[in-house]
Image 1 (cartoon, rainbow over the protein chains, first blue to last red):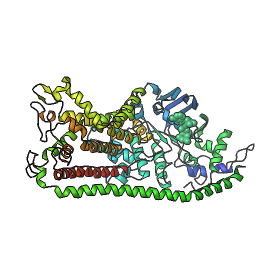
Image 2 (image 1 turned 90 degrees about the horizontal axis):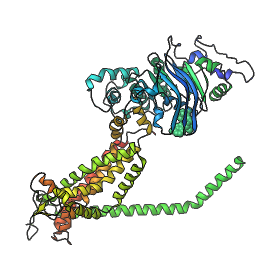
Image 3 (image 1 turned 90 degrees about the vertical axis):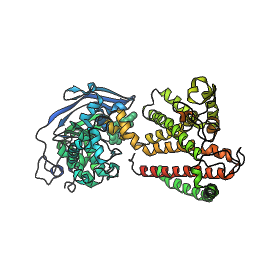
Image 4 (image 1 turned 45 degrees about the vertical axis):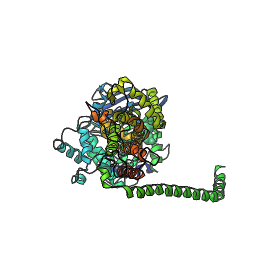
Length: 296
Length: 317
Ligand SMILES: Nc1ncnc2c1ncn2[C@@H]1O[C@H](COP(=O)(O)OP(=O)(O)OP(=O)(O)O)[C@@H](O)[C@H]1O
Ligand SMILES: [Mg+2]
């Protein structure tokens, strides 16, 4: 795997010189960092799903996100990176209007989903189209089956019955790569699964709603390398069906799975571009400092 | 500067901790002593009452009603008080549990407008601090009023204001704060991201509370209910003032006669039969006290079990 090769930014020259990237750029022969780190070739088609237009979010008077504009595309994984407190989570949460749950938060600008302003949506229906997975695995206190079925059912009801949902539950668990491990005992309490399994269950739950956009906020930060790898593979597979936005502190991870990367700093979007370009030849000084500091 | 200061600071911290050590030890020893003393006293009381009680408990007490008589062999058992305890507790909890659950959920999950939440909170706290004899007295005034006459037995037009219903209504006020506090605590212990995870898949607040939060808070909810039951089962003041002095269950006529009738409970039975009571049959008092104590102990064990089972399954914060 790509863990073995040195990160390319180490080979970057100091300020003033031309950036010198030793490893082959783009779809190379597979032994440099850039290509070795990539899980798969870039996706063939990308469809614009969401657009963030000049978005600013403040908590009281404290600006957390400052005029950010970004496209979010299906067929691509978008990674949000940046130092702690730079507004990644805030930006992510605004995409399915979870920011509204914070009373002090105020929002300016526009976010659209398939061309429609999300402010006009019913929050519950928006959140079924744009689902989210959190940093801490947080399965609901019920069985593995019910965790997924809960999403499929009408609000608080217990109907429809198990039999009718079995197919959908299975397909969500399969897409999250958990089916083989839990198929023997779907009645198992979800909170008794391992951390990695719990997180995949949360992904299954988020996928059960058949969303168009999947938001992931540091989904692997509480997990071991093995579970992390499983989830990373999963994310790359998922990008064909849903637009994926992932917040991560792990730049190696961003490099491994993201097609596009957005680097944020103090609420501003400093740089947005294809992963290879952003990591290989960052255009902004601050991006370079950040990725070299964090890599080195 | 900072670098130079660090070692000194550390050393002085260690110095002070070593000079504190003997006082620490003394404190620790004192804490141990108090803890053990407390344990010995509690266990002593429980064992004494159990031993005293079990000597006098006879199986027939559980199946015979109390009756008037001159010797202990003639006065029957405590079937009616036992049923009375179960009945009044069930009725009190039938009021306190849903109301307490509702108030607890509202305080924790909604709590708007804020002034109303504050007011509710203080009211519940005040209820928790009120002696039960005050509830009892208040209940007497309340249920003697002609408006609430329908809830208790009447005798030739005179409203006594005594009934299972009246007692249960006042007892529910004793249980209520315990239910509210525990439900609330249980809900607030659930990390915010769990709620958000449910909203983030399109669930409403109500669906989230109903299907995610309340099941997660179940150990606390059960604890609250059990603590409430414990208080209600053991209360005497409200029973004596509001349930009446009839040892036998004495249903009223008409609709829901049982609930509007009078009777007794194990606590009022013990009160009556204690050496200082009217009936003065200490052996029966001990026997009834034994049953009462056993009920409460069983309740505690069940509660412990439920809580232990539930606590193992939680999230990180
Ligand atoms: N609920 C809140 N109320 C007030 N301020 C908040 C709230 N949440 C976040 N902030 C502030 O907004 C800024 C951005 O926070 P955010 O959580 O989006 O950062 P982040 O990039 O996700 O950081 P991290 O990498 O540590 O998760 C921070 O300065 C933070 O203090
Ligand atoms: Mg964050």
